[in-house]
Length: 330
Image (cartoon, rainbow, N blue to C red; front, side, top):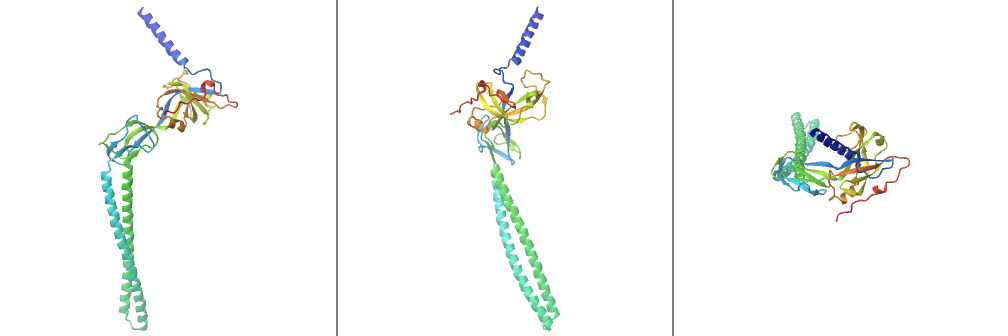
């Protein structure tokens, strides 16, 4: 008797599961040049990382909070960086002063060389006339050679000081950039998923601080059989009906069609066999629609996606798939 009851219960469960997959509520029958699939609302996840190593001074957002482009989400302590900046500026001032001094030495060496050249020319002329000795000529030539060597040394010193000044200026720019990078901002409008560090913790360069989902790039992925996939192209129209709001129909466009097939993923709810080869398709909702309704957007919401297939004589969208966008929240 107990065995019969267990068998009966098992039959009810199996029939119930079969009814679920065979009776997905997709509305009236679609025209032949349309296809549908099940998906979830998804968004690109963005990890906001620190470009510098240091102590976290603040995390300015909460998990689940909406953020705008450029909004500060966290900051790194800049006290050490500001000390480095002040030191680098002092080094620049010193290097520029030494460069100016080296430039003055070059001018002086050039003047000395010019006088030595005049003296050498005159001594040579007098030596040719016999009024200057060879020893005097040798001394004049030696003075000229020394002056020429001093000029080359002065120029080398000037170029070395210039290079040091440039290094010091680069250190100032780096310190200023690091101070700017200590303020972490949201690169896109989105919703905070995780606070990965807390104030007072140390973070390495490249360390993750906040993770968020980009609500400016909302899409749904679903799978089509090869019979439908070869008739779909990027740019084809699509319609989305959310399970939690079936009265609304949101327009979208096909933004990606996988060039290779795959076995149906196990998490996809479809009445077809799991062994069937399918193609991954992505449809994207226009950013302006998302931006105006960003408070309503929640990733993970289930939806049915309807897509128009390429056809020489495309059918009109069925009445129940006429665009009906949720109103903008005031």
